[in-house]
Image: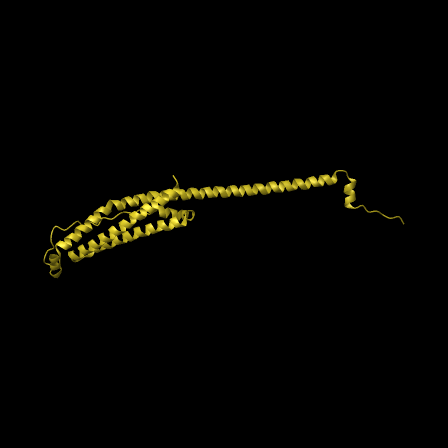
Length: 218
């Protein structure tokens, strides 16, 4: 019985001229297409990341510019009242030094009037703006700003709030006092605290504004 020869695949490919070469070219073409697609996806993702980075950078710079404007405005408010507060505390200290016995006599006997004229006791206070911080929190822009800079700005805002709390306290006391001497002592204490806060705020404003200038890089 004669042997039956079953041709193998490689024998068939060898029997067909150019088939193996054609297969190699097909694999190369597929590899190039995969490479091009992969490269395109990578470049697309890289471009999207770059655009997102630019957007975050623009948001951060816009926030820093708002902070700079706000701190400049708040600093101007402190400068507006600071000299007057220093003058008022000196005036009250001199008043108590000069009229100590008479003021004690009034405390013992409220029917006795306090000496006149009474120094200036207008408790004017700096008015602060917080909108830049509120916008930065609402837009989550703080995450794109140097954390150390954020911490320093937060400290300035906290000191502003402490300053405002002191003014609110003397304002409430002014509506409820029962003796003028105690009220004048309260006002004198307020002016002392206010002047101290204002000194500290002015130093912190100068520091933070310098850092904001560097961060913005105009």
